[in-house]
Image (cartoon, rainbow, N blue to C red; front, side, top):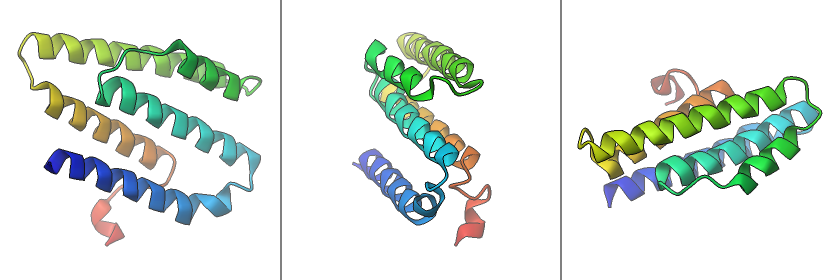
Length: 132
């Protein structure tokens, strides 16, 4: 399936970038924490948005424990949690109303969120053509 191939390619690209670019950076504890948070958020996004599975309190609790004691991190996690819940609900509602096809909408949403996070972390050049 082409969509499955796209997901696999994106996951492979993410793994490659993590290995090439992040491994040396992870020596810094602050960068290591950001990376752990990003990995957990990507996992949650894939499950809740990409697969349409229900929210798991344990995932969010684990993320909150990861950032405990870090200035501003608890608020950031809370805002991410709220935003993701709102997005998932909006997606469910629009699919139920027949405004969009579920599988395509979920795949597109995950891709946009993943790419945005990768850019924010500096793991993806803002202009993909420049990477060639």
